Image (cartoon, rainbow, N blue to C red; front, top):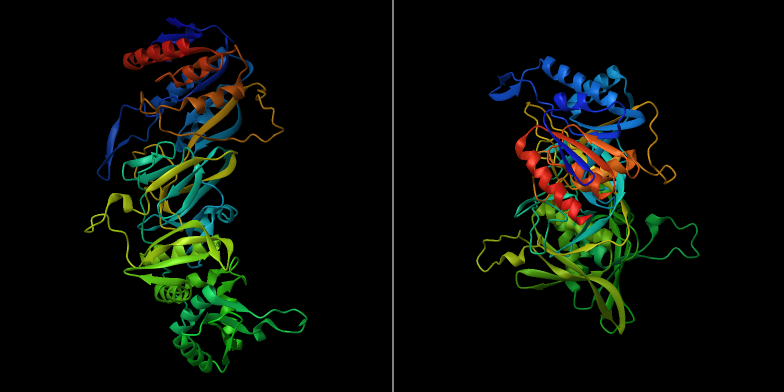
Length: 564
């Protein structure tokens, strides 16, 4: 036995050491036991797997759980990490030796609720969905795009924690927890591990498997885009009986844009409407007044909002094919864009919802859209805007003249939020555990434990909380604490294959003990439980039979004692 400050380390197996501990001598147990202890290995479908006869595992767990119950003081608790596939079995073993099952706990990573995901709900076509809206639905109803296939969502879990804002070269911003993971040019990294200059990974977004049966004239899509940029409707003031389909549509323009008037007139006549050209108060400005029940109906169907700050696409737009979306985008650019070489410049009113729609369209079409927040001037006044450009081709890093710094998914800066926010974890069934945001950026939902079986993997790590008698958790927040813990799985330095972050272990220990009480970990591993216990002034007993990990724990705890 080695004594290091508040810690006592035993070099040996828990079957040999635990019987030597006194009855009712520890105040809590926090541990991650080994689960694959069967010595029989077989081959299924070309892959190695463990035999389904876990008699040896059952006996091992019954033995150490019996000892755990004996050494634990009355009205104390135990937290055990457990694979999802063994959760029910472990719960049965705990109850057999006398423990009382309280509830499951979870450990995962998260995204902010206002994040837009590209999702299919039921039989609806895929479109941008706000995460806060998706989590209100049953996961089985939702499918997310992995970059290659659609995958069913398996669960959502929310928590409140510190958040970070990723600012990309494209002008896009993403809010997430510091522990959420992202596929990057340097591999899978958590938000805290990402540095300016790293590049996220993106993908093309698919359109709907089946489009709406009847076709719409492409001129309608062009007109809708033009209306988003330059259009408005006449006011309803003092016209209480005026039906919205009878309101005049107004398109602003320049007196030299006669081709636009001719194109609009031709379209309006097809739908038995009228269009008239009027000069406005500006020197060269004109307004096209349109009266058409049909065009009003198209606008009301595919566009929400009435002003430059509120106009956006309705959900029905996403049932249309990419040709429709491309024509709509071209109509908008004809109104608010200016061509410069191989790109089109944009300077539009600060309308985040509409810009998010355009980002999604470009992710479906493979276009390179870059917009940043700016301040524009017009007639001596300043107003908030988005300024940038669009290229009708994807970004190619190996293209002649291209530089890595030009990648639109490059991280320009990372800003830590001042306040904690509600964030959500998204788990999917696909083994890649990646899913696309509405802008085409790929996100990773978790770092799930490896499964040897040919089956779907869980994207959260499970824990079981049991007690000997009635255990009262140390909670003083009027019931606001939850059973979800969000911490990075990236430990530095990495000392053990299943190493847990010290911050996570600190939270667990604080829930089940007070200062100067005793914590036991029968499966010490790299000593994360011990390091956490000592750092918050708890006493610790660790048991480890592997000499390599025992020595690492001794070194680690000596450093922790020096810091203390």
